[in-house]
Amino acid sequence: MLKCKEVVEKADALVDGTPLHWRERVALRLHLLMCHHCRRYVRQLGALVTSLHKPAAPPASDEQVDRIMRNLDQAP
Ligand SMILES: [Zn+2]
Image 1 (tube, rainbow, N blue to C red):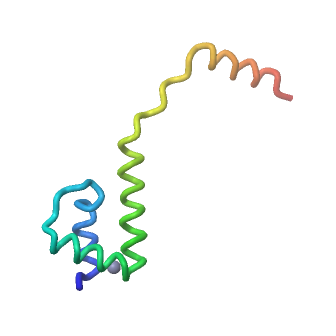
Image 2 (cartoon, helix red, strand yellow; image 1 turned 120 degrees about the horizontal axis):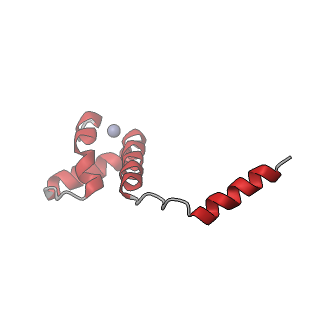
Image 3 (cartoon, rainbow, N blue to C red; image 1 turned 30 degrees about the horizontal axis):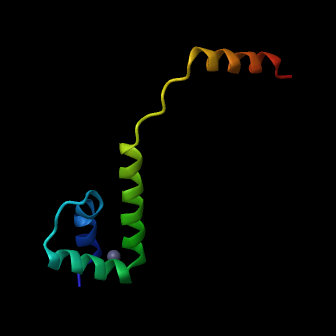
């Protein structure tokens, strides 16, 4: 069975879809079935990678900025 350190070293490949030899893939899956620490690590790495690939929000339009400024002026 793989050690946690080995799973961490191969986690990038799991997350970004890099092809692995079937033996490596099976060994990783087996380890992840039994080790909640590595499952959490891979899940968090996947979430991080996904968030980095999301396009940034478009900048606010002039109308949106004006509306926000008016709301701020009217705030008590
Ligand atoms: Zn582990």
